[in-house]
Length: 154
Length: 462
Image (tube, rainbow over all chains, first blue to last red; front, side):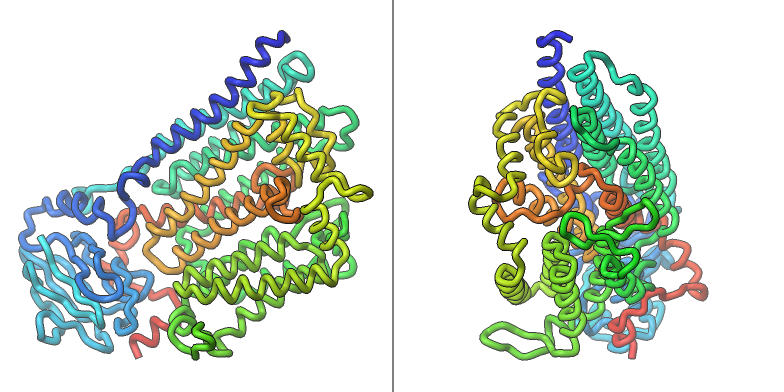
């Protein structure tokens, strides 16, 4: 095998290696210029629920965490309901010492959203009222769970 | 109604394209070795190359089927690293004076590793299930860690008693123990992190936790010291302790843990450097690799990398085999010699990307256990690469750890494939839309089972 061919293969291999790395980085450019993955990020909070809200449901489309240890995050309200609590099984897992394992759930009802307290220790409050089951959740309503305050937003 | 929901892309096709590129690079490298050394394509180019590709594509198909939302770049990166390792091991086998056929063995272990990873993807559809066996994993991990000390099966190879042998078959249990203990730490810390970070007194401005919360931590420290003292394995000891301190810090967000951890570590290394002769030798060689009358392994590795220069001598055209353990502990200098600084940095970038994807899976994960486990696994891989590369380039004293996916060594390869499978599983869970997993369970309220046994979940409800 001629020296020239071997040199070409040798440098070609290095070029291929780096081409591979750059193609991976281009796949991951989302990591560099904003995120799709984290629940607090913009990607899910805004784009996904906008599409999720299609089945002509009025009222809020997402829950924003406005007070408490996880302030700044938000979760979309989906047709399948949102289970809130400290249990890792929940849709919205709170790191709040005053929340119960399975604290509350929000689910579609009528043409809006309803919220149930699931027998939590410290209660679920909508506005200033401690709720039981089937409380409607209009847009702008504030839900307090432990030290966390959630707001239903469009 | 669920169909109308916007689904995140699975990105499996991206993975397929990257995987094809990765396998192509491995095949080019393999052909390069044959052309340079034997002046022709390797005889088994199509069979071995094809077999390697089949194994990688099989894993890809399993991911399509069982973990469709898993991270798309982990498998291609790992396939490339494993393949490059195979090529380099094969290349060192071909060198004159090479003793054994390490490459076929490594190829067999690759298949075993992929099979283990596939089995894990099948057996663990949700990583949170692992939490059910927290203390079983912890116990199994520590027992495995200490098995090399047993009289019959323990083996002392090259001054370190970290092997067990059964028949003609030897295995390094600490590699598997690392995973089990990472699972144990993650699960334990998710349960106790509130107590660890909130309860306790302040001593000298550092918040110290209560003794009962400290218990398992001190046991972990003692176990890692035990490995150091009785098995003379500095690298594993460092890895375990680093993994532990790192996860504690991530779990509690208390900087005091890093200070306490580094303090304990410094005390440990200082005492070890006084007590153990082989440790002093390592430090001497670190400071002066050309010390007369001592091992010239580091010096040869350095010379090899220097000979490689910026672009390397080319695969099959250098002499990495002159260094002892050129295909395992010193595989990084072997790559440095034949692929040069440019190639070595490409390899380091690949490791960086694996770690980045691991941490990204941790960020995206919605449960504390997944977050901690992914962080711990990613951090342990970062630490291991740092310790190995730092050791051979004289940043820190040399310790015997394997380079993940590259080094010849079955247990390391197997363990690293399992780590990747866990990261894939966690990233799959993190990106999988809620409808796929939770819809049915939320809908049928009466059949819902709360699977965790975390005390905090019960405390909240009490």
